[in-house]
Image (cartoon, rainbow, N blue to C red):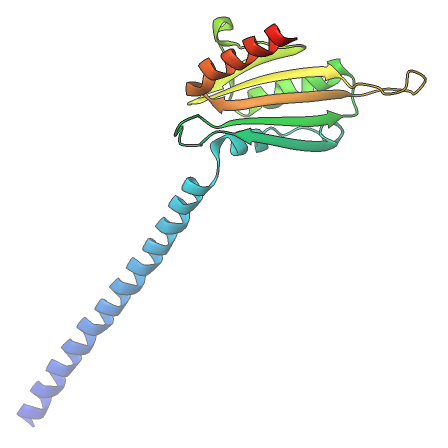
Length: 178
């Protein structure tokens, strides 16, 4: 009876160690998967897109949306620049107000005036972390002068602050050509 009890006791201790090992491996696997998913999202989501998506405005102020991007999000060769255009059913004044509030609510701060690249109908430029946002609100263009034409067009340029010299250069070239 003594040997049997000792054998069972040793087996029980081995089973307990095995159980703890399996639990440790399981917890490690769950933490590893969570870390991969979190880091994967951080690596795959473009910060300029995320910044433009965070602007929460009423449906009437963003009836349609169009995006244009160029450059590398890691600033390889040229930094990423996203130009997002929204069509709004509101007046320029009403639309400007809701976008101004959305920008501030998303954590953007007004940029130094010398930082602003500038443009037609400029409403302002803002900075947040390493990003720069410039916003314009202009009346929609009407094809027919007899058509009732109400609404506005909002353009936001979101870029890494490292792209500002290139944006200023592009803007100067457009001004000289136009």
